[in-house]
Image (cartoon, rainbow, N blue to C red):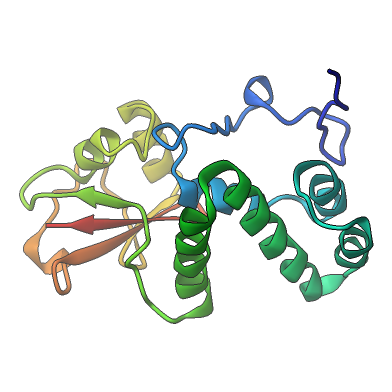
Length: 187
C-alpha cells in the first residue's frame, strides 16, 4: 500500500520531523488539540487535506476548497471535524468542535476544553509543565519571556508567577498558550 506524501503548500512535509508533532494517541495529543491543529492549517492546504484525509464526496471537497477569505473557515471547520471524527470518534469530535466554537465564538462554555488540575500557591510554570502544556520548563520560560502565555486574558510576565486564589472565577482559570491553544485550570 502506498500513499502520497502529505506536504504543506510550501512543499515541506507535514510530520514529526518537520516540527509540531501531531499524534493519533489521545494521551499525546488530546482530541481538542488534534481538532485545533486541523482547524488552523494553512488556507492553501485545506482542499488537499480534505481530499486525502476525509471521506467527503469530491464535489464537496472541491466546493469547500474553492471558498475564499473568511468563508474558508467553514472548510477548515469541516476538515477539523471530519478528521477528528475518524481518529477519535464522533463524540470526541463533537466535544472538540463545541469547545472551539465556545472559545472562538464568544459563547464562553469551557466544559470540553482541555483541563488541568491546579492548586493556588504553586508556580504556574510547574502546573503547566506537569499538565503537559509545555514539554519542559525551559520551553515554558521561553514562551513567557516572549509574551506568549496569558492567564485570564492577561499576559504572564513573571516566569515564577504563583497561582493566586484571585486568578479563579467559579473554580476555573483560562490559560492561553500562543495564539490559539486554550486550557482550563480547575481547583
